Image (cartoon, rainbow, N blue to C red; front, side, top):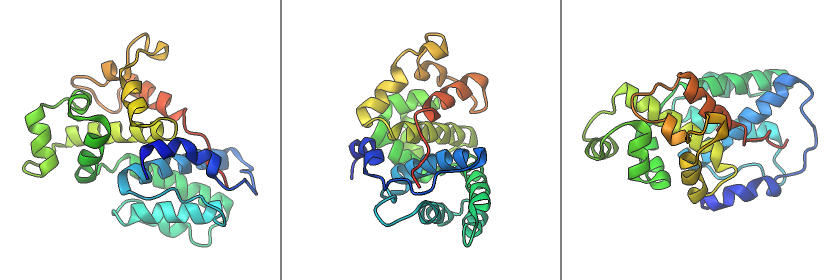
Length: 215
């Protein structure tokens, strides 16, 4: 399956049988969708909300995939026999863990294929020669570069629910009124930090494209 099919996923989901009943559950449903997008493009996990699978099972599958990478293992374990409130809390904790857990060995090849060397070099602030060394494992990825790469990966995952590869690349380079006329690539340029206010605005723009996952 290619990224092109991501845009079709929402229409293929099983109809909702039980809607979230609290704000925390609604937020957890959106985080589940974001985690699902990320698992798809980063961990090669196929969309798992199909006929006969409820949201709780889907959440468990997604969190297990990250737990196998050593991320959010406690949150994954907490989904077993969890009630809706406990499930929402586990999802929130899982997302927090994922946000702070770069996986450069996986992210370099995935983002290179998706964005291309030229755009990726700009977004993470590194040279083509360094990018090659990091990607091949000839050189350890410095923490600040790994954090930028991870931020770009999270943004790309949020976009993947709405755009194909071409659309994702174009999104990064198009000026945005919400960014005062700058493009996301303009913001993610040079010596930026994932916690910068301007970068948070880029993250929010991308995250807004991901709606709650059907249950």
